Picture 1 (cartoon, rainbow, N blue to C red):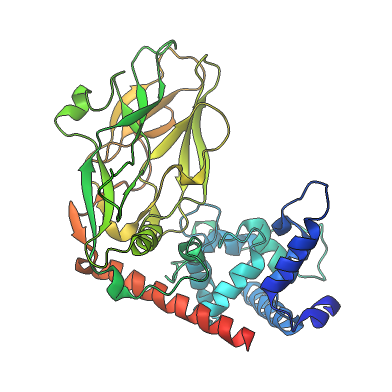
Picture 2: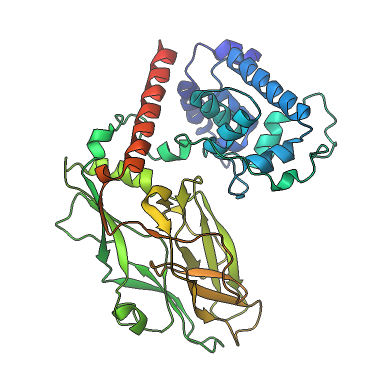
Length: 419
């Protein structure tokens, strides 16, 4: 508090810049600032802000105690899609369920305060650290006696624009008004080039399988156009997907985003980030590591429940793939698939834990899992269009309106802090 009082007239960004420059003079290894206790100094404007946050956390603890709930109970109930991460929308819905009337700005402020990694979402350990009673026994169990079957309760999120939706938008960028995106076009193009990722040659597998990455090259003449990888392609042959029997009648297609209006590449980039963001991280779903050709299949974790990972990716090492190797898809562009899952391969004869690869939608992207039974995931998706101009979708236009309003409020807050 004393240090905040001394620095309260200095902007948080200037504090961070000064600290970074001074620290760079040292030769020893530079650890991440976000992982250190001093990181709060660069996100907390003054001691009054800190007092407001503590008062709000105290209110939340009181509401939980009134309902006989512990911190873990609340996290489980707020986590609507059960992915062990709280988004801004999930936190907003949970706190309204507790009877707290807050604004989106309050939620953003709380998430930024709780989230030490500055990723725009909250892990359980961060949620617990913020809400634990400072006077309680540190060794006390996480869970207070909760109401009956509360673990099965899921509280509906209250949808707001996620901080992750804005993470790749430059801070000095102008807000993107909805009118600027009306003429953005989404369509599918046949993928003509693929890069081999992995196949079953020189393995003990009794069935063939090859995994491919589609090329995202748009050519020289399409400057305001972006093609997107939504996952790797699985083929139950060892041939290139353009020659495979299963894909010959219905060639594999990739999504293409282009601007038919302003012609500005910057507009296309912001639309891509809003509708097709990178995943937060990857989760290993199945691996075969004892073979001479190891394989690891990864499921992408979307930035919020407004997005879906349609496909998966495969690597030949146990290191998680880079976040930018594929993108997630906005739920407003999708519809539940009508097709039943089709198994195209299993590892019979390969030894180790059984696993299988499936087509679970018309996209025919890689979907892998442990075991050989039909996938039990609640819902799989297909695109709801073959070609779309954004102004034709009210849900998508509403999303951009929310993002525009959020960005405008951010700029207003920055201006008021500078004043």
